[in-house]
Length: 274
Image (tube, rainbow, N blue to C red; front, side):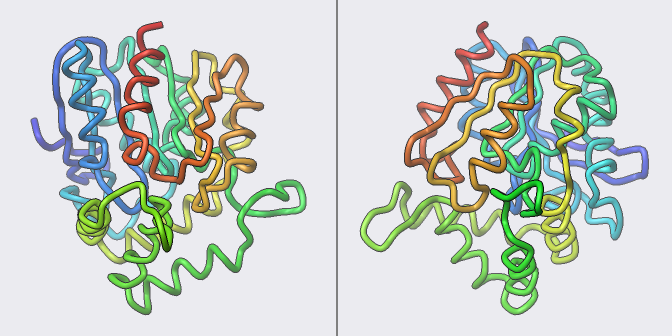
């Protein structure tokens, strides 16, 4: 079943590997489900069922004009869970923008069928810098994302993904080919979905959703994340989610699922084993 049709008729591309207790993986912006391949393969080999899907507007999924808000995106997650039968004993794990669907699912669906959750380099609880969120990203920086994409999307993502993976002038935790691969994933998304989702993850406040987490929750974040600063997100999420486990990767950039792939995969499997 490579595609699931959502309640509003959007086709969502789904990768369903392995058998066992389901682990649903939501990807980051501007990538797609393929960015989870290393973890999905490890999960399947360890006896779990790994379900990763392309968010609407991205990868191989449909590109409708509407629906790029977190309520609709979370309804898509719920529809994928229902269509795949992954509604019992499920773990839901979100990377970056994907953490928003996880948080909103816990509140909007009261965590139905979920036994554990993960927020990885996640935008939760709030990215935007405000008077009551001083560690966030300022509006001008967020606005520059949309401006850069509209001016020259291919060039913008080349630069963006270098920061994403912590590529510097002297050292790089990934090869040039990894950056090129991620760029190819980003360019599969539609222009309109890409812009609308950038607005969504930059301006959606998930602070009220944190109280809905009533399951073991793993929070992983890199201390050198320049894309999604840890103080406004990972550390704040862990503080707001009762009983959560915060694991900080010292010096790691935003894309730690790839730069720290082995370590992160082991941490995820250890968490699931508990």
